[in-house]
Image 1 (cartoon, chains in turn yellow, cyan):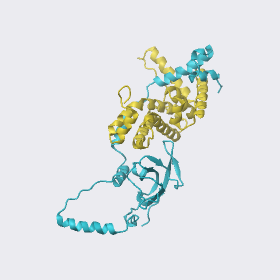
Image 2 (cartoon, rainbow over the protein chains, first blue to last red):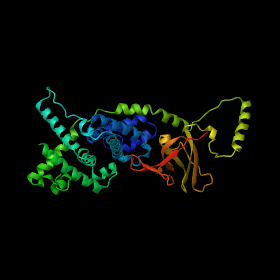
Image 3 (spheres, chains in turn orange, red):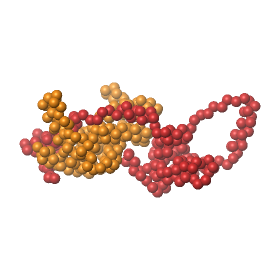
Image 4 (tube, each protein chain N blue to C red):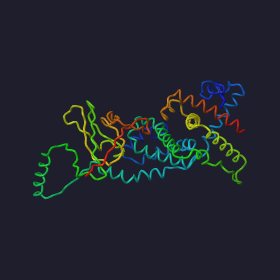
Length: 182
Length: 202
């Protein structure tokens, strides 16, 4: 039990492994938002992201007994979903990666601020999709999901110096793309 | 792609305060931070909780069949005393037959084959095989070390095809088969052993 009274990841994992399948719902509720956000940024498509995350959760459930450090469940889940995303990217034509999600179309009922925000999001999403999958992953884990380099290493299986270099290159490419769009 | 001032990286990595950057560098760092904030705030896809829990309710039919076949289950027989004597004689006869015979060829289906697992784990209390054929559930295929020489063996009938597997030692240590010869990376940063089961020709 943590400070907020919610069961810890290790406690939830133990409950699931003891046969309480419904406890896996706690895992889903706890990590689904971040995983969907991460997968959507990686795949450029909310539908593909939902597929990748759903597949990832099912695989995680079936292999939960092999999660060696339940206290680090979060990075373990990101690793599974990251691999699902790579499979999706490998399966689909390259051109589809950046064209799947059209920029949001402004609804006449939206106010001006909401329209501007939607345009900004679309601009950043387009810039992000110009990065290679490795740089995109590094930037999203670091700056969108707020992971430390140690957590990123656990989630990707890459070495910390490699990840730092990718984050640096991603920042440079993204800044260039954002400046070009302005 | 142009390189950017290393102080921007330092600031974004929390090594120096953002406020110490010159105005142009701070603008660039803040632009990247704003982009990340927009990505974090934008709505993601709708929840997949329903479809995940439904998938857990309805595992693949083949998986269920394999799990049913390999899961140990208790069977209770109720019979009259006279039949008990006959059954006891039958059990004694079976017990006298040689043990650890490989599965009979006749008992193996056309799309099945025989897999033999051998592994050396001196001092281990238990060794099991888990893999794609038993939903990675430990305990369902236990190996035996009858002569206590540290060599664990087991023979099972599996569907023909390629299977991934690992050994589980003492219920907690997952080990790839050093004799497998073929390996495949899994989703969890490890390598599973690869086993090819060929169908038995009747």
